[in-house]
Length: 329
Image (cartoon, rainbow, N blue to C red):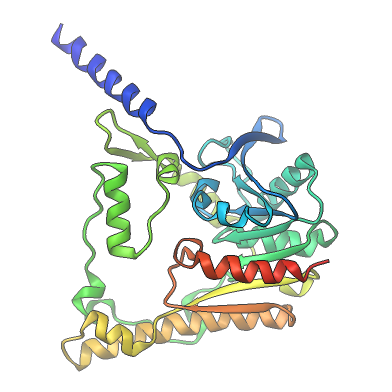
């Protein structure tokens, strides 16, 4: 009997946990079929005016649950969760950059969106570059959310020597272990360590909920992530003929980092400065590549911003996107 009671108690706790939490973001959820047996989750935050479609990378569209409503004050905002993630289908194949772009196009067709602005983060930048080059007649503009990068490059391609991680200041090498005791606790850890935190709705898409309310296993298949990386392509910016706005994260000025991380000797400071040089070289190479292919692109630099710019710099993003979109045909 005891062996039966424990599982039932766990199920009861799980049911209570699932029932009490509700996604606070004001969006409508629908599913769009992009090929036989494959449906993508599409979030609709409402709003009026030109459609804006948010594309995530290795996250789901719920990553934008706090950012999208700010845009919805001026535009009709949607978000797409790519295949293999969250509530979208998880087929065995279809994870190349080209197939991902085709999926997005299928969603645009299904929703009958006219000249939408596409905004993509991380792998979403691959979608932007592909669609902007192949289907400019369908797109109003592209917004790279720190995603105008060439994932085919190696560190050697940036012409800079990597920093010796073992010589960095202790504060740069050490990171407190994540707190998986609950979703709010994990968000608090993210905010404390990284300065930003994913919406709880996103965490619940990415991690299973344990019966006691703690966070369980990571739900994204490693095969999906590996297949996405295997299917990356070099961006052909020169093929893009639609307006482009790009946000570019730069590291904090080196003196600010010295104050923050407190190197204890010349060796640690040299390693910190070399890490800074690497970060700057990577960002500047991405900027040069984009400007070379799209000379008219507007690039907004964000020194010290988080990689997830829509979490750390939402106010700047909304302001710049409004100006950019106002100038579109």
